[in-house]
Length: 325
Image 1 (spheres, rainbow, N blue to C red):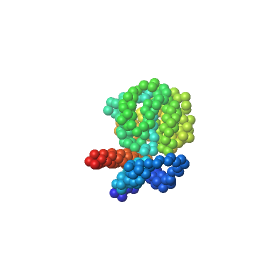
Image 2: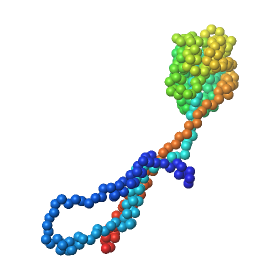
Image 3: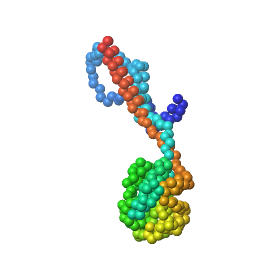
């Protein structure tokens, strides 16, 4: 009971001053009416006696007086707007925004991954496991090939993100690789989330080297550093390949080093890729901020309804009493 009373409050407590308004009218504004004109009535004494005008008016009964003050107190109580503060509901707000940057160039169609999977299929399987494990983060997705495209906004909707990951296809954004442009788009998207207190992390996965960027990767990494975006990089595929399909390991390592991140190399197997994502998950602690929310439930309708019911009951009582008399 005491806990309930501590959560009870009035939105307009100053309204209780209205409780004394009837007393002000009773004692301050009562005065004798000044008669300025007189009329002589010869038969006035007989008229007074016949009409019983010399009798004092009946004073209100104690019951009526009590009823007036009770109803008035209930109306003033309703005017003061009583409220009940609900117990606080604690909500964990994610304080880390993660952007996945996935290569969907034509080389991701190669089915040189153990188990007969294409590179992109292996990436899809491992990324969805990582997303499912990061329950307290906001995660988005950027894809890149000839150019970079936002493919899923930063949000807590993991189911929607997994559906977008399933929709990836090799070559859907071209055949080349634009790593620098992908980093630039990622930095812009992370800055546009509006939550300046949240830390920003991006994870870049590619199986090739930069061949189509307008923004050079190292310049993009400097941009990420100035915007406090940490970058992890994953080189996936055959590191012994040559030409445009060869993974540029020094570039990926430089990007990670410049932004305070780490760099990994995954062989052509789903298990090695899963191990990389698990290690990233392990070194990335959960960041949440607990927020307490309480709601104010208005209660003014209860005293107002009680006052109206009392007035109705008193009026019915008077009518019944007069009919009996």
